[in-house]
Image (cartoon, rainbow, N blue to C red; front, side):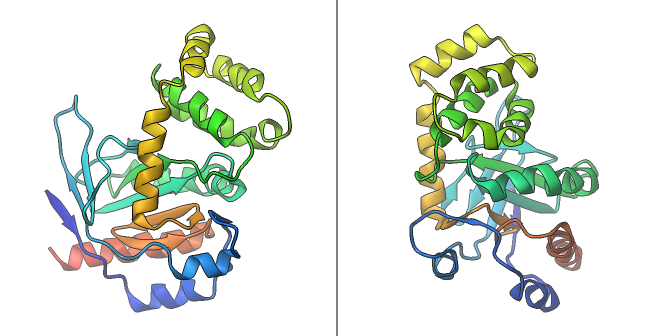
Length: 243
């Protein structure tokens, strides 16, 4: 088991204190108000499992094992958890503009274990359909390419009307079996998985999307890449110092 503390360098906290909150509120109250009583720092543990089993991730007393989708090595010194809603514009911004650099610099180099947890805020148009279609894509091993396409086409499927035809075309572009996807989508068989993720987000105190935990440290909103680098690099420094 790898247990991560919650301490970050003071200069990083100060650097982020003046950042504009670029996030979607999960409740009707203003975003800044919701952020005051949101995620709190928690110890994070990652347990390496057999290749056929999901990596065990514990955040405080909350077990995220099997919830969401993982990238990177479970032995990485930094764990980053992303809690997002597919219909949140700022979640799309992070996924499209910031995450690719984080993956290249930290995930693929073995420095960061990344867990993406898609859940339902409950106030965005067609979020449930987009989430269900992406979870159904996951049943075919196509979660990540479908996720990318869903975020890229967010403006289109969020508009009025039935979003499924567009989501189905995205699945086809991702090389998935659209007939199988349609059966899965109609049966709503993945909704229990989404409900579990939504419950976990609530238990963690998520009030805005996207919300992140970096070695247990809460980060709210789609911060610029430079700020995420500061947070991750600080966590790496703490990890080295604790060895």
